[in-house]
Length: 378
Image 1 (cartoon, helix red, strand yellow):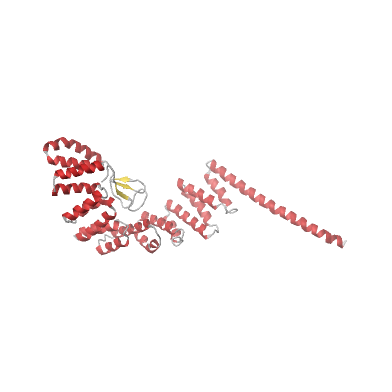
Image 2 (cartoon, rainbow, N blue to C red):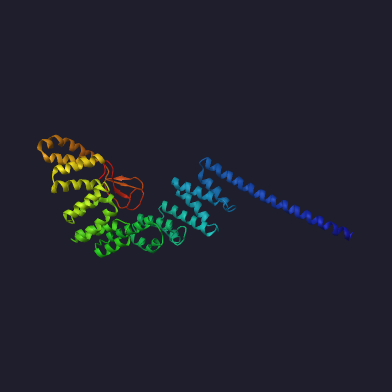
């Protein structure tokens, strides 16, 4: 009898192992069935426009299965793009509570900060982003999002606290943004200290705003050599800004030959319309109206432009009274046409305006709104 018992023990063990395995499989299948049922239910709610119920149903799955994080991130981003920030926040907050690998957790934290920003919850967004400035993969994105908050709240001084972090990145746009916000902070304090403005201009050569602020302040203080240096730097590195910079340079009282050389370079090398118009004035003053007219005709053949045509009309009217009488109505039409045209355009988003903005009102990028070129441009 005892021998029979020992013979039956392996059979009992094998039976127990087999039944246990079946039980585990049964639980796994039951769990999967539950997940599938909840997922199907959630998708059905989405398809029937019952989004609140869908979110509740899908969020329950996070307690069971955390391997589908990317799916939830995509869903939350979809809600954010639609403007349903509360739904996006709920999903990202739920994901943020999960114990995930650090890179994935930081990415979710960044997405949640973007939700808060979109919903106008700037304080919450800032608290999350501050912790991401030192994250290697997200530092640049976190700084850009932080700067968006400071732009919205006009907290320019806060932006200056991140100067070291900006310099550790390779982002040119972040450097330009920081320089512009520094200029905004100085403007808010009514600071026209030439030494401070000069230091700011030297700290970010890629930015135009500090050089422009330095030049205008120097002109107000009758420091024309300093103003000329700053303005020449702008037109030499950013000739597309000549339409706004050349009138200021005229106030610096450049020597006739220096003025001629500068205008010639901008007109012939860069085909700048404003430079061509001013060069025609120089030729009419130092040469003859005929020379200026021939110059404008040559340029018009090379580069059709309404403003060059307008200047040609003005020159011909100055030559004789009959011409002035005959062309006055044409000039009025040209003036009316140009009066309705935009003067600036954002190279980033295409926003057009007759007023200059250092910060594009449309895409919120610094120094992208530039004088327009082309047939109607300056």
